[in-house]
Length: 561
Image (cartoon, rainbow, N blue to C red; front, side):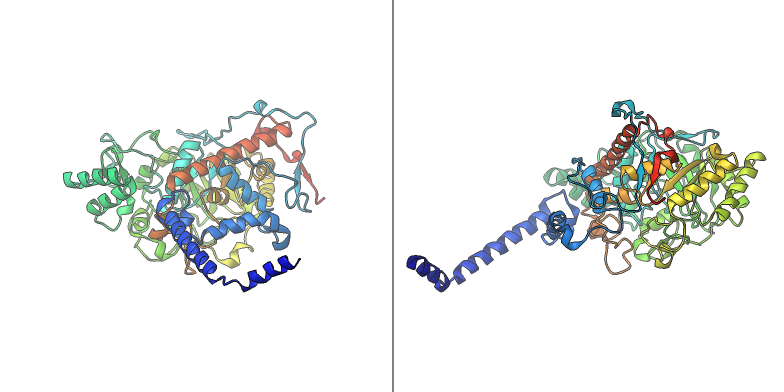
């Protein structure tokens, strides 16, 4: 016992300063090595490239979240934290099985799906999830999926982020909506250069510049070589509007001044299914005086499957807003505006003083493109929607133009830049909206004349199935796709509060964007879409449904009744 006491005393009396100094030096060296690795070596995490070392705290706290959840609370904006975790797991092709129970297994607002007494095996469910828009158009659009990426403009999303979404759309087969920011080179990133495509504007370096590119590409990597070659060849403000062809070592973009006759008559096969959105600013399809440019629109539609006219969106019923610092020269080039000035689109679409005028403009676009055209709206009440449905009925009965589809955005939809006072006070939630729309169209006998696209805070397969049950034909998703693309919900999308998107996804900050991992995120986005489809098939199987079209309101058990 005395020996133990003496040993304890010796520990207290020992001079520990040398040990602490050694530990401190080791800690500094280790931290420096991690910093260098995060910032300059690793190519798997853009957050760590922007915030080396300190960014690892995020994953440390994430690691503590589940075991410490009962002490620090849980996700309260979505149904539960598990929904966010599901997206992250699905995007990385990790198992999406959960243990014990979710954090909110049977909250009072939960709507349940009725399972069948005779469940199906998953292989018995139809795997071909397709939908045809504009069957009466000369060139209808048949989708390869029933899920699409909702409207998000290039400029609000970084060029690198848009490229990742476009590549994922092309490889996974889901449609991608341009948002009101026009069709840009980043949506055409999979569209390869060839001499036969005469609508390209090409910039090519000298023999010396190409030699420098080859040397640096061999010694370093494509990114370093391309940047150096770009500095030598693209000495202009809108250099980011050009795509790069490594094989021919040249830069190219669509030359919108090329005669329409030289544009493709059939959409090239190396493009994703693009839905072109026109907002009140008419970006990318207007003359210098602000009026609609019919020929430019026809050129744009050489690359797009159909058109959506944006009348309003869930998070804001005003025109689109893009802060001036995001309006780079390339964004200005795409949209036909002045660089670095705030873009505040008009509240009202210029050809929609009345619903009849709007439908006539829809007809004009249908005639110009020979493709489906629809409108995006937010429902405020049954009476207000009846103004649309009555005009739809009148148009159908009198052979007048009308939209091929209606995109219904719920009032709880998101936005990168919206007035707070409108976010939660304007627009009905999507389920209430679908109830109004579907019932009214069925009562008028015109439900089969228009397709219904629904969107609002959709994350997981059960969210998708619920909206199909409420009557939607097609589902648009923004938030879920954003998370699969690396969004950590820092809420710095607009960049107006002095902070930029930390992962380079929703910012035009060149330093942040340069670390965004386009190829990796294209894969995670595609994985998310594919796992959504797999989860939907699983739900249909246990509900005894062989197809989406078999779903109906009878498949819901509302626990609030």
